[in-house]
Image 1 (cartoon, rainbow, N blue to C red):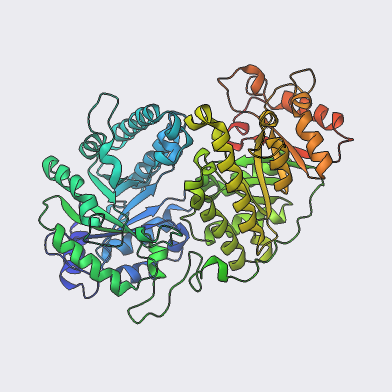
Image 2 (image 1 turned 180 degrees about the vertical axis):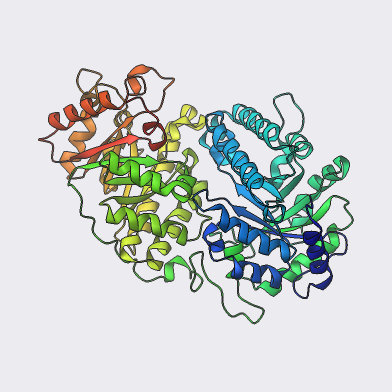
Length: 588
């Protein structure tokens, strides 16, 4: 760890010598945590630093909110350093692995370096820590090699920008990354460990000793780090993980976890690279019960979530005073709402939007979304939670879909009426999976089964709207065992659908209205609302798919024609533009 001043070093040595709780190690002394709720430092971070003292934390990965004034960070970092706690600027998003988002990654480096250059030495960040998980991107399933290549290029650009600036550069990697290779055929883990000053291995298990325990899962990374002479932290999890309870210490007390971590530290001390433990994350760790079994809470505070089947009815969201015709967009970058919420609301006002699909980061506390949704509600904007991945169509991945359902329902139980989501929107496109080419009937059978399970789980104790994106050509497929179009089946199951009518003209045999006619007829027959979604993203499928070349004004003209042509359709409810990131940067 880079040490910048003697007072900080003295504080760290004092802390290491005087820890009275948690685990201690004479040679591997780091104990870190991730803090995703930057608002916790606005009052100086006293509560956070008190917890750090109690639990022996001496390294904080602090998510950066660039809207906060420098003085807020200065005060917190000064107090942290006085207590022997290092602070690393934290940022990351799966999209940061893609070349199109490289500027966001470099923006974190630039912001941190500019901040450090403007404040006294005692108030500077000690490092930058990246949490980029490209393996959750849809592209990871379809073109893994390209994602790894663009990720490495982005990482190298980040390192070129930030190396040698007095900052320790760190990165999160999962324990199972040791099987992946660089485009040149070398070990991806070795490249990452060599490139970065420090790596935190996410060994998310709650058992120290077993064939699949923390020691076993992390030993290859530790051996590699020993060889490379690089410090390595072992990350554990405290967040509730429905269906994956083996990956977290959630449900156990702080004392029980500390006993396990003490054992882990003792066993790993034989590795010269082992630098300590990192606990994900502060909010969930703080909410764990104490040694007496008291306390504890879910991400947003309060009591822990009981099993979903034992919950009370989910309260409804307050009605939104908006135009009856929907005008909306998709927010796919989960961090956009968390970091740039006001920009989204300003854009929505400019474009007269009244509807948003917002992708959620389920590792965030409920408090991360309340302010944004409250402001959106006041502005006449209805917000629906969004999630999805092609593999969610497969029954083996049903639990991933249910995580989103349970998070949203429990969120709505915990917040006020004008802070609640109005529904859950799915974007599941299994036709990009290899299995679709070899056995589409089986994929459709599993997909429809998962959709049925989704609707049942959502509706059993809530009035949340169930919705999904639907490709315009799915009407050509039948539901296995039923004489019904797949499109009609999906429209019937959902409260509304968003039809991906990705064309750049309203009229004509291949225009928006024409390619939508079968689904519109189904929706009219079934009495279900239908939204027309158009594309603003550049498309490799051809210029006719997207308005990217023509720009916003041309698109608005075509959407006005769609509204006029479909004015007599009882199901047609409005338009959506895919997606916010592309629309805000589109040609005028």
